[in-house]
Length: 417
Image (cartoon, rainbow, N blue to C red; front, top):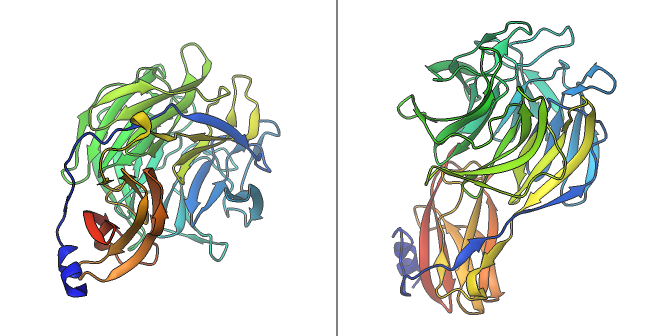
């Protein structure tokens, strides 16, 4: 019997119930304020490693100080912990996380050099910093995101007055500590944001070199072909925003409109599949130059500034519940994990049309069980689990759901490291 089950897991999808509408819809999200950061700041970064969030660097308009401080937030306890400072105080930088390491890239230094090449690696496990290969192109007010184990740096500028804007993508490979340069972004801009979804990178908003006009431009980069495609523009043009991926969609939050000098609380959501924007519940306060990240199916927003150039320490959490249409799923369904490919954390969602014993396991290509994500009695409705594959090798895995001793469905997942 065990041999038969291992053979079955190699099938991409097995369904023993009729496929009908899933009945699952998302509700509007809600914002909640949690514990403040120890240090007020803007133009900083935030990254998640092993369930903790690390806020780094930035600028405090209240004290006029370029910051080097690193603060760790534990969402489970709401407690902040002071960690080792960055070697180079800076703001206007960006960061990325690969294999448990955080990389702080570029920015503005203590001497107010607008556009530096400094790259430093932070290891949360040892609380140590290491200097890495410098950026090929000096930048500040750029954007970066991680995809397939590499960090993509887009946009930004050099200098403060009449800055030179950066066009090419610089790609960092932490495994070899090397940079490569890729195709120019079609629209030169700084003070933008970017997100990686389903193997593509999306550059969002920002300021143009000419008269620093505010943009709603959305452009999609395909690393496989090294090409850019223009997509539907963001409804509200803005710069100094933050964008996060959540459940396969991009959430563009807050920002600044240069023409009116207005700081926004606006939240707009982009669906890469349909190329359509929708509106979500606004951030409770107007903010620009804040840091944001996604953790455990929620978006965390840290600090930032208002129209009076006041820096804040406030932290807000945005959560979207999953509701079940008419409260009753009409089938057993195992949805495709998201993101996919992933590294190293992914979310797996499934529907149960009736209560009962459920087992959710992850197997490798040999059919060997790698992890058990659920094993026991579960109620009728929609469920979600998080799989952290930090200790697993990159490659293909299969997630399988069983109920009543029967295999219901299997999904193929790709872990990239």
